[in-house]
Image 1 (tube, rainbow, N blue to C red):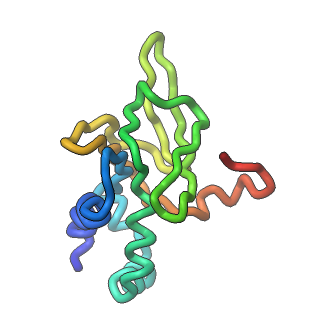
Image 2 (image 1 turned 90 degrees about the vertical axis):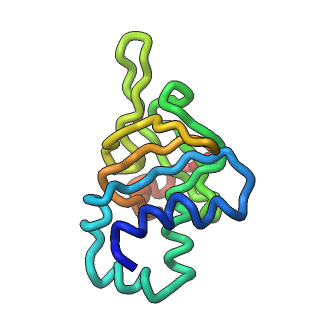
Length: 137
């Protein structure tokens, strides 16, 4: 699997089996090139890990920037593991600026079954390890 084709898989594969709408935190092609080659090789060989990786980038429900609050947690379809979003308010406008530790490249791309936010890094559940001991929603 070529790295760029991972973006396509991320958007399409898990969504065939669930009812929408969805919010997808889609890593940019550049973000996917930052995955260490050893880790990418493991994802290519292990379908279960690849599915978990993909599911952690998908949230059930359509969440546009205007729907979110800074510090809000969204529940992914991967074992209901949360993603923390960062939102900035500019006057009356809310702007999604990050998911976990990943800066956003482009937010609020509407789709037929939800919304896509393009992120600059990949997301991992371990991104939230800094909040050990904190009760997550």
